[in-house]
Image (cartoon, rainbow, N blue to C red; front, side, top):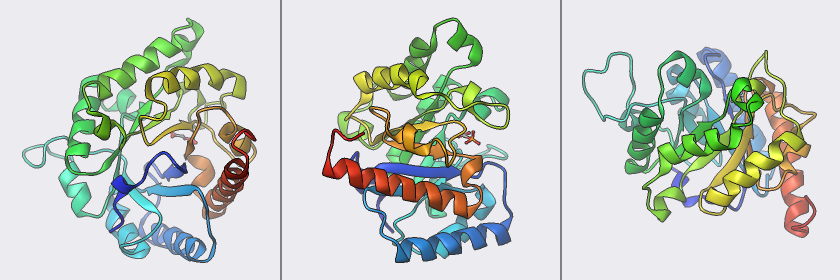
Length: 269
Ligand code: PGA
């Protein structure tokens, strides 16, 4: 299987989590369409990834095949390899099922399932120990933003999960900045202006030291291009707009066009 660890900061990471959506039939259809698309369409400079529900992970793995250019992730994983942890799935099990990425610390998990900075730290460590890539999600609430504390908050979340990693471990980490106020049906997309500062702050700490700094939260077909143009943004983590395959494919195309332009002229974005 393609080793996710072989990838680095030289590409735009464009991925979607399906959250708690899609049965096996729908997962199958989506992935078959995606597989056919990536087989016939070059996506220079773009790294696609898909994060289905646990129930669909093996179906997606089988449909993608072992050497797919599309990476496969899970939405959560426990730090222990095995044991009496009812309802949990370990990083080791996720790897066994064919996952290459582990999403960690999404705000929905922090809010509803007791995810803490400490559990994100353990999950990042376990993910790296098994040779998978952690996709660490960080983001502040509307109240924290209002009070002017966004940067401190997200840097603390990131440091709490990543401090102490060796340089070569950090290089395998993806960070997704997903402000809570921008996520989901009740969210509004962050503006380019609002994103400059958090990405500059994240880049100061982690720029060039991780595999990527992604933005997530109400990404759609209309804003994908300008979001990719923000300095230090090296990918998009998408929910609703990519749950139907045509939406995801369109954003992949936008990213490939962006990557081609910036490869030709690094100052173009
Ligand atoms: P959304 O979800 O694109 O539907 O806002 C983003 C996310 O939760 O990562």
